[in-house]
Amino acid sequence: MDQANKKRNWGDILAHVVVVVLLIWTIFPLYWLIITAFKPLEEFMTYPPTFWPTKWTLDNFYEGLIRQNGLPALWDSLVISIGTLVISLAVGVPAAYSIARYKTGGPSLAFTILSFRFMPPIVPTVALFLIATSLGILDTYALLILVNCMAVVPFVVWIMAGFFEEIPYSIEEAAQLDGASWLRMFWDQVLPLSAPGLVAVGLFAFIFTWNELLFATILTGRNVTPFTKIVPGINIGHVEPHWGAIAALGLIVIIPIIIGSWYLQKYIVRGMSYGAIRE
Image (tube, rainbow, N blue to C red):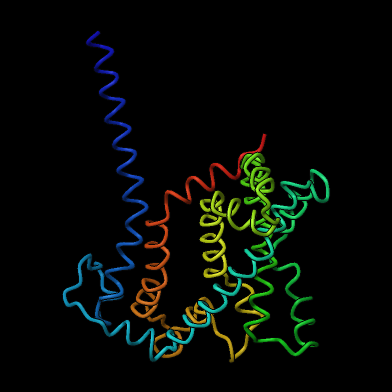
């Protein structure tokens, strides 16, 4: 019995050690990002590196947001992300409901739509560039929103179709018997029950667009500059990256995502685990 308890204790200790190591491995980059954002310029490349700033400063935030045009870039990314989110949900949610309830397109349509997301984004980029140039919409919000919807809508349809399939149809039948129209039934009964799935796919759709780099680099010029495009150009002079400004901008970028994910985590877990189940 003592031998078994010893083995169990060593197993618990080993498990805790593994968890602590993985936690440090995950958190340390975030910690380094935070302290770099507040370090003065002379401490970026010191050796040995300083793990705590000798002097805390906000100069990096001014450099990243004002001098390096980070503030307009964040605005551009926000407009593109919100536009993509709204259109993707407006198109993807009704499509997912149609597939789940009325089997539109047969049993394989949901996976066929999802398969478009398997395609590497670089594949249609040249064609999109040529089409946008001929239509005169290159370097516009509309173009970036549409091309990001191309990647996000399949994800929304796939997750929400699985979620709608789990909602009992008897609820909708009862609403129809009470005289509710299809739109009223969908708005009052189906959407509230699918709120966890909507929150989950909405947050992921926003994150996918917020972090997108390829389209933001190739399909934009001077009028639209998402923050993912300007980060590689944040330099001291012509060559050396300005790590403080990059870290400051990166910290500003991740804070809304972290806060949103923290407050919505119960919806995200339920939505992703409940809606994505396939028998």
